[in-house]
Image 1: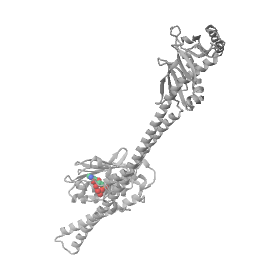
Image 2 (image 1 turned 90 degrees about the vertical axis):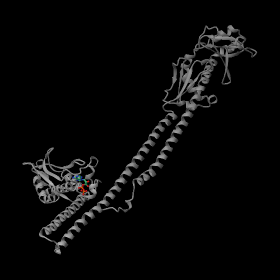
Image 3 (image 1 turned 120 degrees about the vertical axis):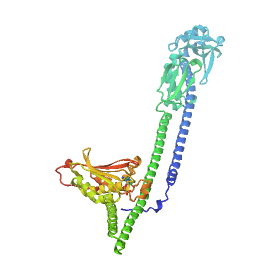
Image 4 (image 1 turned 180 degrees about the vertical axis):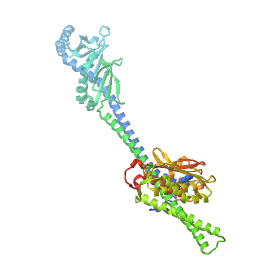
Length: 526
Ligand code: ADP
């Protein structure tokens, strides 16, 4: 068995490990927190910038519609302008307007004296006249330009009544794609409108028209339209392919990535620290194992030496006393040899060098042979014992010697961990289609939390009695390894203060009948 140097770990405390963990985890978590904060801040900045931009574009859409409207009016006003310049009267101008009315509703001319009540808006350094019908006959607004007479004086405003709902529906795409995008001088080259969806809603909130599909964005902005389109609202939203939407998705991915990184970091720290703690515990238990073994070896040697010296010098008073010394020598020698066997077996099992010689084994014979050598000790220590063997028992597929060794370990424990109620029962039987060997005592028992741990190497339950009882914490782990190498299992049933029953379950020989005695590597079940 190779033992690690332990001195360095002797004083290694739980607090030390926690400090190491914190030293790794805290700076890493601070970095993660900084990463998350910066990302969120950046996301907020990008979102507020996008929202401002969308609000700006929403404002500009009204202007662009007015621009489009003026273009349409200018496009059709030629004949009316000519009629006015030629000094034509209102009737002549109306007739000229009527010749180009196709794209609007009815033509309309307002003499200069009647222009009060109409509004004027400057679009691209030109004037657009608009207004509603104060007489209430027409429900739609009027759009016009000023007309000049032969002397250059303004004679009135000539234009058409038009349907703004139909106008926005028809011209939205042109407004967004041509006016906003190409009119650098007016709109400062809003090239980014390529990634914006524009929707127009009426006063009831019904959507009249849309240009491109709006993406899901919190940065959408609305603005009421003004002038001839004043009852409508425009809403500007980035499309799904807009840089702000891409940046939003990227930030979600980045945050998820940072969160995963933090989780991985924490998990790695916890797993790493647990591993280190287990290694330290192992080294510490090995250290106490060494101390136990040394003590276990020295005590019987000292007792044997004393007994031999006494006998050698003839310092006994009677034959009974001499037999007592001889008996002591026998007992301590067998204890020594069992300990040495355990240590050697264990290291052979650890290195995988131990091989099992599997064959049909009658576990009743194993019990009887073990009891032959153990009976003396039981009687010596004042135990009542009972051997329970059935008349018929299937053969086990086992290595008889090693199983006997296991049984001796269990018997040894039963004796060691019993207090006043010195009762041991041992037997063999059948369960779950397997052959069993069991040892039961009425000793101190093992609490549920420790029932698994005791099969680990060097583990001893820290109860008062264990401090008084000698042991290296190897027996059960060796038993477990041996039985698992047989493809069997060990079970323990125990109540603290009531006693324990250890059961070895081994495969039956019939299961493998016909096969010759086999050899199994010791390590296969471990
Ligand atoms: P050791 O007996 O040398 O300490 P073992 O591996 O045989 O090592 O046992 C491990 C621990 O399991 C013991 O230290 C003891 O705490 C507990 N144990 C084993 N057998 C019994 C038993 N029959 N009754 C109570 N506790 C037991």
